[in-house]
Length: 263
Length: 132
Picture 1 (cartoon, rainbow over the protein chains, first blue to last red):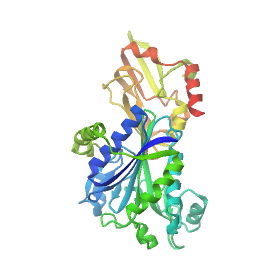
Picture 2: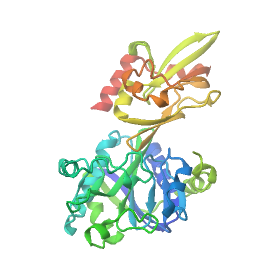
Picture 3: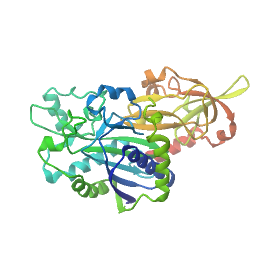
Picture 4: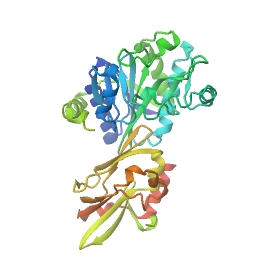
C-alpha cells in the first residue's frame, strides 16, 4: 500500500485548481509522494487541453462567457460546472505510474463500482457491451476524435451511460494525464448535471434521473479508488510549502494570458 | 543508426554524437521502449532551432492518449536542426525510432553530461527493470 494524502477542496477558481494539481505532480516527481484530490469550481470554467488552440473556443458559443484556463494535460476542452473533479498524483515508483492506459481504466472502473448503488447502466466505452451496442446502432462514428469538447470525444477507458436503444452511449467521465520525470498526474471530471455552458452534454441527472451530490460521490468513490490503486489514504492539507509553489504557478502560469493563449 | 551504437539517457532519449566541423553534435530521439510505452502519439512540439537547452531539462513535448509527456535534453547545447517533417508523420517514431524518427540535433557546449549517458547494454538492463 502506498501512503497517499487525501485532499477534499471546496469549489475554487480554475487557475488555482490547475496550479494545485501541478504543484502536487511536482511533489510526486521530486519526493515520491502520492495525492488523491477531489475538487470543484467556483464558477463555470472552460479548461483547454494543453495542445489545443485558444481560438478553438470561439467555435463553442455556449461557453464563450465562461472563465477559461489551460491545463497541463492533454485531450479536449472540458466545461467544469456541475461536476466533481478528481486528480491523482502518483510517484514513479507506483506500479501504475508507467501505465497510462491501465491507470485510466482502473480509476474509471472504480468510479463505476462506486456508483453501483444508484443502479446506473455504466460501462467503459471500450468494453465489449458498449462497443457492440454502438456498432449495432450505427453510432460508432457519432463521437469525433477531434471534437473541441472532451466529452464529445471517446476513448476506450471513458465511462459511458448506456441509454435507451435510440441513442448512443453518453460519456459521463473522462480523464487526461501529465507526466513529469516518471511521476504521473491524472485528472478528470464526472458530469453530475448538465451545464448551461455546455447544454449539448447531459449529465447523470438528465440521463438517469438521479441527483448525486459531489459530497455523496466523494465519500462513495474514495475507498474504491484507494483499493484499486492500493493507496492508504490520510486526509491532510496542502501545507505551506506546496501552497507557495501553487501560488507561484498560479501567478506565473495558470492565471496569465500568455499561458492560456499560448497556442 | 543501430541501437547498439547509441548512448541513452535514464529518461529514454537516445543520442548519437558526431564531429561536425570541429564541434560535437548530438542527434537525439526517443527510444523504441519509450515510444511503445507512450502508445498512439498524436502530437509533438519540437524545440526551436537556436534554442539553448540544458541536459536533463525538458526540451520537447509529446501527447499520446490525452497524456502529455516531456522529452528531456540528454546534453547541454544549442539546437541546430529539428526534424521538421516529424509532426506530420508521427508514425515514424514507432517504425524507425533510431532513423527517420530523430527529433533534433544539438551542438554540445558542455560535454560533462555525456559521461552520465548509458551504453546499450546498461540501457537494456534499465528497460528490463522498468518493464518488470
